[in-house]
Length: 468
Image (cartoon, rainbow, N blue to C red; front, side):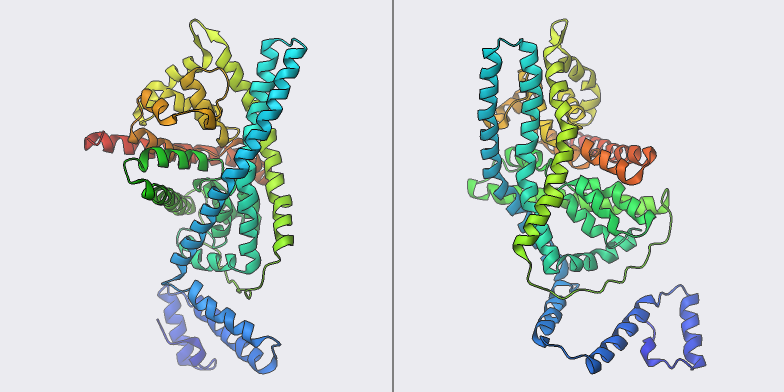
């Protein structure tokens, strides 16, 4: 680095010449200029401003030296995100189960009502087994994680930590052609990708905002967590001592998250060099002081503004999926249902990706909401004619093994779930935000191509080395 600008006299020709030389060599002096401005304003404030709570300010400086440290910043950030994930996953189990039981009781009453009026079986199947059951599962699976994640995320923001995350990630995203604030929108995607698309409004540059929109899908939302958790525990953590199962499952999930982050940075870099070519805008962030969160107000606002609004959109998009799934599972052509014929059609392509036709079919029908992918898959395997409640299936792994699953099948389904196109709610949100059919189609096509390429490569490598 050259001589700091603060030591160079403005009227010195030598200093100006040295500065010009550095600029000619392509060296950036922006950070030094910003640093000098900050030091000058800090000096002025130190002399002119009196702080009522100077101890609090000093505590902020001490914390910042730790949480924004080049050494400790990233480990602390990953640890906090890990705790948030654990709280979200562990805390959502009980309320999800309670909601599922509550909706099950209502379904029993609906069933009794349809039987009392002697309603046709097809009407009962469409309205109860299709529409009601599909919608109730989306609510019971999606609401509890959002009700936990969004308030925790809002509390971290209220505390003042999220700007530190953006500060730590700024250099990575700038080197990939993105924007430091993309770290905040990416973190939001862990709760819901649709809400994360809305949060990209904080990025002022249209080009960099579009990069954030197109790459946000590569972090797993709460709709994909059930698939990732179940398969990680059944296959990736199989064979280890029971006391280590939870730890290994958590490590596998963190590995998936890191894969998503790496893909996000790689795709951001490619887009910034091709379709969204441009120079990254500078991101000068003034870190606010740490402050005590307003817990009750923050939780209520996060629940109202994010959890309920996203859930409302999910229900609108996902409700028809239950009806379509029931119809396809109950209309037969020849000696098999339409679902079975669809699976047979996709089988050759799916085997090249280390999957099977039922898995591809489940992802296609699960477009409205990722939460219903696994129920649709089990329904296809069991030929039940209605979506299956995962908690009522005695041994899910035995069902998978009976249909030829291996650890490679589970891994590729996890990778495909992580990388494939956004759900219908997110695509609808992208269209509303961009007002563009082209960008909405690309936001689905880019992840799909990456998911196909990654699972195909994984399968070929596994077979080449004889691992399966």
